[in-house]
Image 1: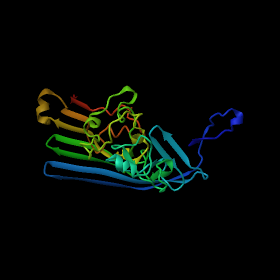
Image 2 (image 1 turned 135 degrees about the vertical axis):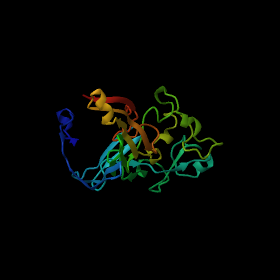
Image 3 (image 1 turned 180 degrees about the vertical axis):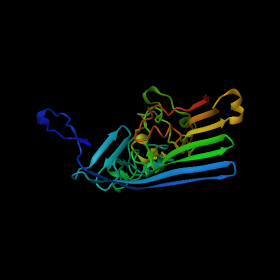
Image 4 (image 1 turned 90 degrees about the horizontal axis):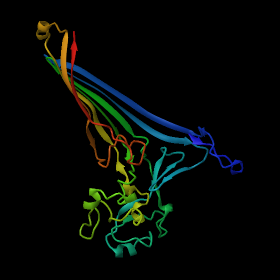
Length: 299
């Protein structure tokens, strides 16, 4: 969907949304289930995984660019929708002599700044050196989920896990860039940024979000693996034996403890990876962890 272009002669208004092209999604989904028992012990598994390959087939010869402060994407025929369109970061400058011997980035470039690849070999780093990365925050390459169930003499344990893979996140906002809009720097910026004494740091030299413009150009340096596996729900329950309940004229009584969103496995530690799906900023409320307990009584 894209707004139809309307000539400036009629006021430069934004036109209505219209399907302007063809997009292809091809994939495969697999499901598997197994249930069995060993005496009084029962166990079961149900799982599924879906693979998807997204490609723009035709948008009438157009190339669509999307820009924000520190991010750029491209949509054109033959690519996944909203593919990242970024400079290729190849390290961090270790000395001013290295800066002088490298393609020109800006007059403020210095040791500790991010170093970019001169893709077209013209001696200058600019928008012409961006590369297409066939990945976006909108389309995971695969999604999956599975249930585990166990039971033994009235005790049951069930869990549901859900996850995505093959996904890249480009985080933006005050919590990503240091001292932006009056915010502080995170602990990672304070402890793992480049200094002459810490040349192998993950992050470049600390600057404000405006003074260190070289560091915050749209580049693959800031891409993060957004894959995750989350335990969406787990419940442990115990159903009291019927022979105990007959004495008090109760048909059924079970007690349980339940947890939701309690465990997440992901390389992305900046924020909740589930709520950053198809967005770039970190201004989204995370999924709540809840822990509850209760009883079910049937008369």
